[in-house]
Image (tube, rainbow, N blue to C red; front, top):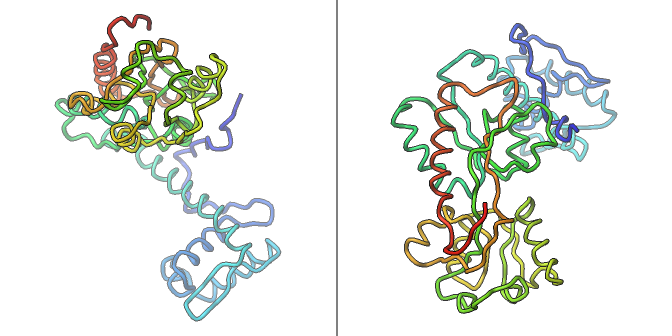
Length: 335
């Protein structure tokens, strides 16, 4: 099932020179669309023509032909410069994506065999707070000069970026993996999840907290994903709906602040709030959640296996994750 096929472009052949390609689809000429982007972003025909190395009359003629091909006016000249019509804004929003894709393809072609290119890792916000930085520090001891870029996004956006070639590999959950063709994964470690609350939260005084009793408190839940689904199923399994006061949030920094400073509860891994736990500001509730634990895997494109530097980084992440996930509540067994 190719759920993301529309955002997984095929890499152009290295023999092609993108600057010399004249692309046309239907009545729209891709080169004229790129000209439109330049005009809109520079705010004038004069500046755009200088940037594009074409004459101003030639650029004006190209825009006229583009307007004729789409059947409507795209640009309006005003005292403060060029502005777009409603149709022009629509065409521009798609044209700039074409511009960005061409730039991405050219960059990938230039660095096709470049071992010193930037290594780009995509990861989840919950892993980026402590686990990934710890592994990176260890990796840097053997890779002190290798350029690295870390991108933090939710799972779906990570997979889209991986398909597009924006990312070299992803360290995230195994969910959604089966919906994307052309990707491979390897599980690195099992992440243990806990219901976290501030130190003096009333729920800590409960001898055997249940989902029904915890529903009386405000909760912070993910916007999408398996953890959100797991929470919804946990509440409904005891015949209750989600708590009345719910805040949807994917920012770990925001979640930590809310949990530490209020009666909000949240489902988090211990390493996500390691500093707060060490300072005794946040503590896990005495409730075991083996069914909430999640597999963390490295995911990469089948036709772009990891190089030596990438494999080394993954090894450090795996070792750090296995060490961090070894902690568990006393009396809580299971995977």
